[in-house]
Every structure is written in structure tokens, then in C-alpha cells.
Length: 100
Image (cartoon, rainbow, N blue to C red; front, side, top):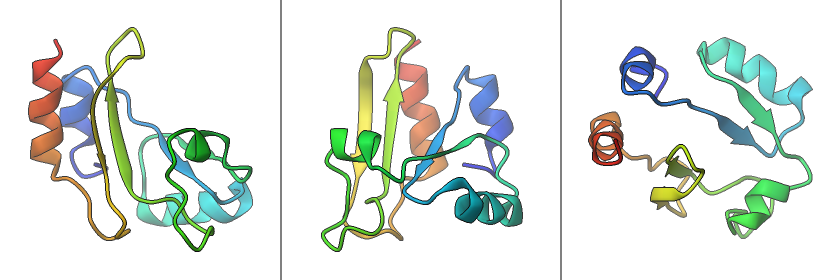
């Protein structure tokens, strides 16, 4: 998503990432990867547990993407067991067009 951040912004989207790590661990990774959007920390798993996204080992979240409308209603979602699997940016941008 970082590579197409300008396209997401142009589509009216705000991107937020959530990590199980505390900021002192996650922020250096975000800086290294040059992530242009906020990376929120959820070491107590409040958001992660609310969406049942903690992996079976309990140390990381499953990869997930949620598209919410302006009323905070989930309009599209993706999650997988494999942390390497992510939806393509083009798919996300198409889904954003559907909720305008």
C-alpha cells in the first residue's frame, strides 16, 4: 500500500496499519520500510482480538485489510493465515470505487 499511497489518498482513503508490537519495536520497522501512513500499536490485542486476527501461535496478527465507509461500516474485508499473502493494491482501489 505504501507504493500506491498517493492513489489511495486520491481515492479518498485513509490507511492505518496495526501491529501487535509496541511502538519502540514497530516504529523502526515502519521507518525502514518508509511507511507513509500511521502504524498503530496493539500489544494488548484489543483491535486484533475484536476481529479474531491473532495467529494460532499468538505472537502476530494474521494479515488483514478492512475497507470502511465514512460511517465506519465494514464494506470489504480480507484476511489470511499466511502473513505473506496480501491483496493487490489494484483490488483495493477497485473496492474503494464501489463504496463512493
